[in-house]
Length: 360
Image (tube, rainbow, N blue to C red; front, side, top):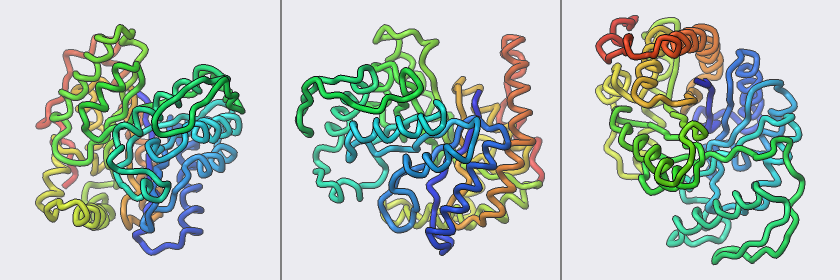
């Protein structure tokens, strides 16, 4: 299983955009040095997040790193132009010598729609049509295509072409069954973001995706699944909580007020940090156990941790990354390799077992 990191480059701490960009480059360089597999950057168009153009940031990251794959998380394809998206990420691919990926989503915020002149009533149709065009461009340099929301193309050449023969395009979802089915029907890799509740409740979505893959006649072995959750590590659980809990709750409540979510406090945080909850927060042993338990649920190919959440201090994020790369990643990789060699059915972790490693 690949292990990586994602960030929205939150500005909630009051740090200047200039300083936050420097910090973001430090994060991706460290992730590369730690031997992690992927680093993903989100797209937003609001004052509390730094990055409006992931490809620009990933282009800078490409020349500062050597091995790590570089992805958006997500590219808001519904309000972007697929030709420019492909061109931008082809440039990142050339700069990185073939390490670029696109994680295409419909977007969890709506600011980009009026900003770029799109009607929210066309939310789903925009995404479906633009994904179709993006995939057509990926397959061939000259494209003939027509749709409702963009001018038609007639044998139009789209340049440059990337290093990778087929630039990876993932579909990213937060829980929409329709989007899961779309990914499976198209045979595209899928990322599921789990930001609340219990991961086990997302298992039906994974099964729906794999069934859609089979129904469409795709080889299941060629499709891939990623799970994305919030995560944070300290030398002990108490240290992780001290650095992460307050900024995390402030961020969730800030966004929750916009969306009508009920306020979250200590009780909700503890439930999410419990062995069967969505937060992978605690000491390295505790986080490793949770990642292995989730792998038993989903059998996924990639896990992406989102650590720089809200106003978490940059130094604490770097320390969390170090623990993830040096203490969690080796344990998870070794255990999954062992399970693969032995069939993986005799040592399945249950939530109660995961709880035994807590440092509280």
